Image (cartoon, rainbow, N blue to C red):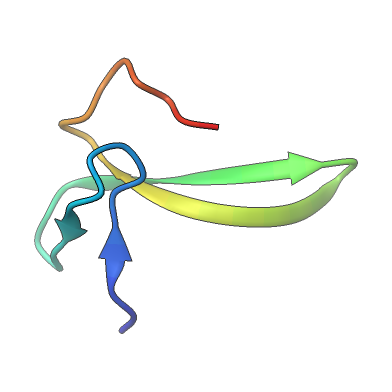
Length: 46
């Protein structure tokens, strides 16, 4: 399993951590995806 890093706090997301995936879609095509801790609210990064 690849290491996941939070887009907001840049901290590591460990296997048991609650997190969400952020997917960017441009012109109906998946461009990239990132992960964020659920504990990092209100600071959605683009």
